[in-house]
Length: 375
Ligand code: GMT
Image (tube, rainbow, N blue to C red; front, side, top):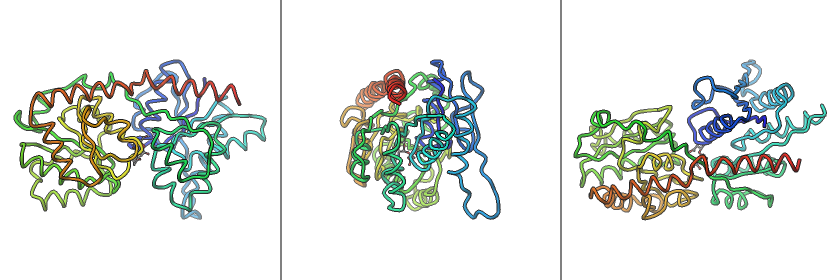
């Protein structure tokens, strides 16, 4: 199949999933055309069957806000027409689904009929989507998409709750390329961050408010009072300043390592003994899955789709949002005994295997075939 994938090219989970999906489809012989405004971070070097079409964003001074959606729709019309694509798969509803709908309508006037599939990732529905100013467009696009997928049962439920739609939503969970994990764990590198008698706690996110990174720091302080530990913070975003300020206030700076943005987190997360994900809401929690794939157990909040990923008492533990005492207690339970930690690490790895690329990729391929057959 010739598939156009529309995505956000940044470090966010939706962009990572869309890029990895395209790369996997290309390896299976499909022709993949990524369409977005800059090169997707996980795309890397030249690969067979993969093409990248950059949407040029104008800087015409008349526009205080550049009309990205219009430029994307125009690009889609161009790529679909000249590359003769079979279908479009857009990741994240805003504004990708509405741009795809507009392109579909324009193409119909030229005698080209192309279906589009919308994958909902989370904040497009739970945060941004709930903003009433977006609601009519998202509802319309959900209803007009040839198929809609959501990354968890929880997100599917949220979509039905917040939008006026009863259309079918296919749940296709996020996935992980297991081979990319644990291939180069290096004790020498670990020793640069922690001594052998110390545990490493890790958190990876975009440091937005919804991630509650301050809870990570507070939980870490409690863990470190019992078990000598280091905290590896990976990522960057609006809350970084407050997080660093909190570290100074709590006197934990000398034990906290702030790495910043990392292109390929699999290398750094694998150094850890425990991953913390205390998010306010999370449709899936790809970061938790990536940690588990690197044999790292997860202590997380029990919100949104996280319980579908992190199994309480098996791959880690779940707590109520903001319950720092409980998060610290469970973390200490996992970390204080070598044998317990070993068991949780093994469980985390087998939990991640349930979301392997091999298990999930056929679900997308089957959906593509179904959509093309019914279109
Ligand atoms: O975490 C974010 O806020 C970024 C967002 C994105 O667009 O990448 O993440 C969402 O999609 C990911 C991939 O499906 C999910 O793993 C995240 O849980 C989801 N984030 C939220 O729901 C807050």
